[in-house]
Length: 191
Figure 1 (cartoon, rainbow, N blue to C red):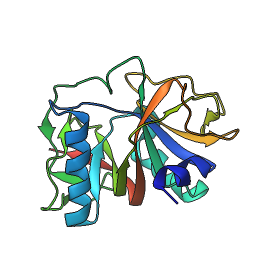
Figure 2: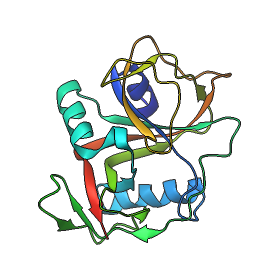
Figure 3: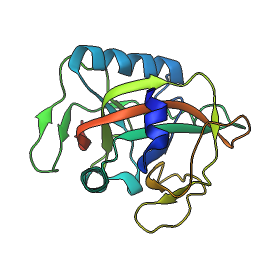
């Protein structure tokens, strides 16, 4: 079963807006992160989303069995918004107390690195060549409110599927990629 099929058949997952970032185009980022997984058995993806802080993601994954992040971009836009922040993270923590250096085989983990910066921990990542999806089948996991879009402070949301979800020809969001989360699922990051 393809990773996207696994994700869309799961009751719980994370949906995230994505695109060009830190002066790199989308495919460059994805290919680099996939090489990280080959070399280090994981990659770290900066997210900075209030709705997907590590403690939220870790709890969500532990309680619901969620293991997938589906990356989306509105079809009327280019993939994501090109952010110019390219600060490099060098350390991570699964609990915000004990810090370790990022694996030396990882390529740069970049973005806007602040005291509140977080990231997803992926053990698998696949690009999606074509396909669109609507947000209609998804509700936010924390309050059951339908997910209608993404904001500047919450670019990723843990969600529950309230009805079947599938790749469509006329959906609102382009499906760009899907990642499988590995333990510890999400981490805090530091320069």
